[in-house]
Length: 331
Ligand SMILES: CC(C)(COP(=O)(O)OP(=O)(O)OC[C@H]1O[C@@H](n2cnc3c(N)ncnc32)[C@H](O)[C@@H]1OP(=O)(O)O)[C@@H](O)C(=O)NCCC(=O)NCCS
Picture (cartoon, protein in one colour):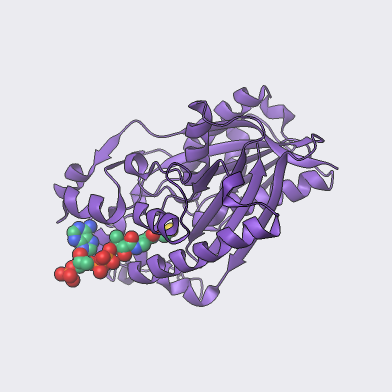
């Protein structure tokens, strides 16, 4: 039976490091407040004139090189982001042309923090049915240009950073390897718990000067509701995923979680009694990079030589929507 494996990984972060102390020069905050609540020390900002698809391109080039493939070998592109280059067309089309190819099908996935796992599920399904062979899945974000750098938005601003991560999914007939399982959920009644009011397509025009004056152009978050629901749902989806696949936590080499908040991942590990060293984190260096966080962490772990063939990896994510998801993969 055909399944999908990751045949190449890559990631890219912009060089500009912004520490908590740097932010404290612009808004009323402190390294102590940010680190104690989120585990974040610093993040990267892409700066003026850089598009999300530029970051995606750098990560994609590395993933292609790692897979020993050329852009023309790609059969399909899936691009997960909440910070697309423009309202339309999708950023996957911009990425495609930057890769120097045309005709390849392109799909944008707008699932925020679960974007990479949702995209993995789609890539896996396409490969299983034999529709495509090599699928590029990218998660990329430029948050820094739509964060509110005033005290009114500081609860959101301090958490997010810019990054991109990419994986090439390819078919394997290797028994037991590849994507074994994905589980995708959403509950739209929490849409307003983490959202942005513009664009508001129910109004003509869909963005006004008043929207800017009223701060509707900035993301809004009810942090406590996000925190509580993330822990509740992730503590349910982890055991459910293991049980449905007849494996236990002892079989899992690493959990690669979305990097929303170190405290969320620590509380999950504590509640589920997961031994130290299983749940991986790198939020300290990059903040929350939404769709990029899982491929960025996976790429770092892979390039550090920590993953071996046949290791069992569990991916989990929770974010805006609310959406949450898991995936089990034998490397
Ligand atoms: C964002 C988060 C760290 C805030 O922690 P919290 O304990 O809920 O903090 P609150 O929002 O209640 O604010 C507590 C106080 O700190 C202040 N505050 C908020 N942001 C601050 C900042 N960056 N620096 C300093 N003080 C800040 C608030 O104004 C408030 O002050 P007050 O008590 O005088 O009113 C936390 O709710 C969280 O991590 N939630 C999950 C977020 C998440 O994962 N989002 C991404 C999902 S993909």
